[in-house]
Image 1 (cartoon, helix red, strand yellow):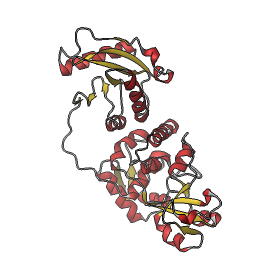
Image 2 (tube, one colour):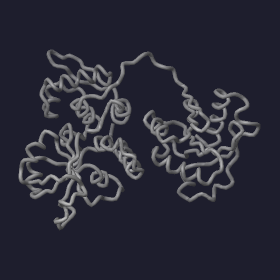
Image 3 (cartoon, one colour):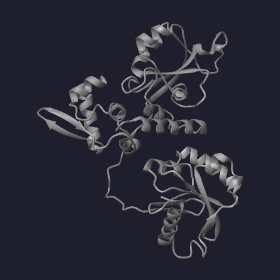
Image 4 (cartoon, helix red, strand yellow):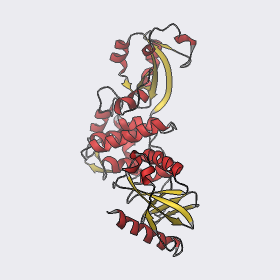
Length: 354
């Protein structure tokens, strides 16, 4: 869609929902000061200046249909807002429910013609959709159900299989997998067809669409983080199947700068055995004086204890799976981590074949 066509849709949408006086007599015109912006802010957007509710506003319109990730949009919006004396509004033709939620969390004013107008500085949050009937409250899925879902999204090898086969693939008991299947069907994330005495799991969605549907019901797999010094990494690696995790894994998958401390994930039920062995020495904290005698920072590591075995889902030979990794950073507020996590998701969706 051309810039002019989208602007026409924007004007009509504003007139339909807010009235005839909202846009003023003259709608918008190209912003003449766009050349003052850094080049990296000029290429992803077109800029048009106008008035909304009598206030000067600048429409920062995404050129590509997909737009940038919400974290990047926030960074760009903040940069433009420092240069423009008025309200800057991000405009995009379509936006996923996940990205819409992230934009709102970042408090970025945005407009999607025919769908949503979010202007926090004006006190406006209008959404054009029919409210569905009362739905059951979505709570967090159990960890076995989450592991099953994430494996389906990343490897697409769970749909259509009976419970006993899923139990073998994921390393859970048949009873645990049956409970996981029941959870997924109760939440309407999947269906289960009884074939003889077996339940065959089936998903109507796949890949990114499935992720966006189930995302509110997922949680970080990390139950605890422990600082330790490893004495014999070969024994740890052979016996406890650690996977690169945390910022170490995020740096492995994205352009994030690597950390000096290595971070690894292991299944939480293996920790009691590991901590009793002579292969690791637990530290009281990262800054503990106990590390002063160490010759190399790499001897200090951060262990993440995971509620499910990080090897169950992974598509990497060394790192944890990217979706669980993203979930492990959900509560993080560091902007560089947020941007890296958004990049991580985009890599996942660009590589999936379904």
